[in-house]
Length: 356
Ligand SMILES: Cc1ncc(COP(=O)(O)O)c(C=O)c1O
Image (cartoon, rainbow, N blue to C red; front, side):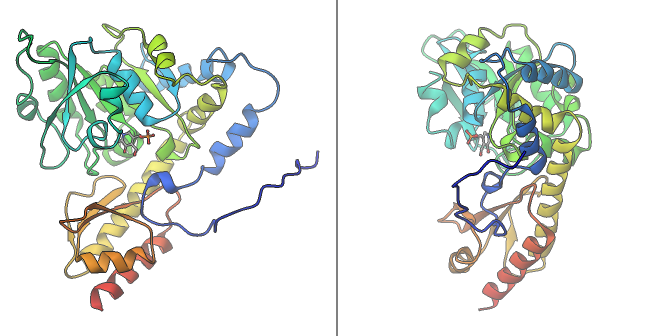
């Protein structure tokens, strides 16, 4: 059959990449191919399709027999749906001040989910039992929102990675206080690549109750899933997903993407590559006098401090964001499609601009 005719025209240069975000990347070709495979014919809508059914097996192969996936459109939606399922109307979620749910979701957990966030400043994006205790109190105090969940991000928003033992300590502490543990895993694959362990080793094996599992940053077109690991006390997820406008009618196309990533090793290949490019970038940057790397580079992000004017000139050549403009802090992200040449050209440009 001839390929279908289309009037679509390309409006960008497919060979230009920057360091702004792993969300700037396109779709991994293997995911795009899987979407084409799932196309054609009719399948039951709203998750009763063959792809979503198969995804459950794939998810159980990673996270064990009690795991269940609820595919959603995006990461904010996954977090809002997941957190609602473990909080009462009077409940609160303890999270790092830098957490995506706190600073980058437009207030959706509060406004859409109706959830109070209790935030804690952290040196590196990571909570600890001691830091959690700054907000974990007052369960009987009706004047205070009741802490019911601890939410951590793996990897964190600052590109750091919790060890399995660190997550275990958080889970034990949270559970001892009757709180659930949620992981925002929009970059869970990157954490697994760094730790070099299966996904379950730092999630259900150490006590995590539910997570938001990322697909988009790992090479999907769009699509994430809430994954319930321990169903005890997790309520009405199906209904909350619909109510929160995260129930895809053509769900097969979300599920097949997650399946394409997770059924074999695409998730790990993509994440490993992105992480390796961040290591290469960090190495190059460390050799440039006057540029400070701010946090341990443990996944696919490099945070750095450099003179403001240098960043502004560099931004004319490569896309990236200021993280804290006043301090001169920037974030450089690598993706599954970042190449060694991209990194080397960027480091060379940084050197040039620093020398001007
Ligand atoms: C830590 C974290 N959580 C969740 C998300 C997902 O957000 P979105 O709603 O844009 O898919 C992101 C995206 O940048 C993120 O960095």
